[in-house]
Image 1: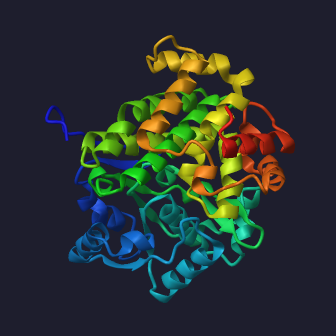
Image 2: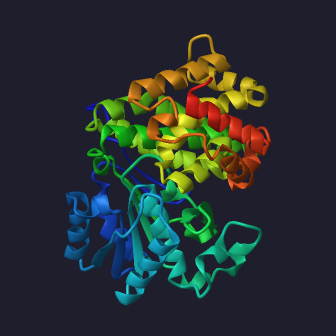
Length: 390
């Protein structure tokens, strides 16, 4: 941590956020302020047995807040994971949820908190039309979110991405009240994250901010948030990857992640439109997919975003600011932090390019891409990302 300044702040946008190293000790009081007496801590299997989870549970219990762990969650959470979480919640007579971990755990936890009070199936609340009006809001459980990775920003999101294993489609479950009531951004919790996961999740944060910035949807507030989020990634992601104990970099990446999820109220784009079906079909890591797809999508969108990207390059203080300067920075960043250049590098080929193109066109993220690509255009972007053709 920098000796010049120890960052510690309380924010109320877009929800209550406790920012700073060591703030995890405030978890019990945040839960109790929301009326929790018996909390279900939802996390992923990799974290469940680690000290950061065990200490959080012990801290809750020491204050009189009962707390138990549910961790039956996949890297791309499924409907069954949510159903199992709901069963655990009801069986344990819990009265609130602690969403603790990476994006998958947070998404699953938020979906569990929604579904504990519903009598309809999960897919009835997919983010389509006015499905959100079906939610029994009174039955939803309160949520405190504690991210341990800096990527998805799910801690400040009003939705969960859940995989439908029957159709191999990632579906977005939405309701405004799914936004957690309180968040803790504590960089000490992410200090042990391996370098490769730090890189992949950090690039996911970049993709959220970047696609929100490039969206044609009118939302100047989100544009400004995205712009600064990208700068924070530029200044902090290499340091976080190189030295996991760099709490300054870790904290700023957590903030950049939350900013990305706040900014993408403006919309996402073709990176996510492709990453969603790829993740559903190949069970690949979402952040890694966005990181690999990024330059190929930028080039495909170039005609519509060149001027805007030039402004971004100027804000980032890149030499000779231009679209090409920004693209070169993205490529250099990926290489520096160990992101593969191609999808082939993570075992994905172009055999299902046409299917993925069809799935991308109807993905919700496609609607706010700067160019409305056809199925064949998406398939071509995918092929380029498989072969490395820029």
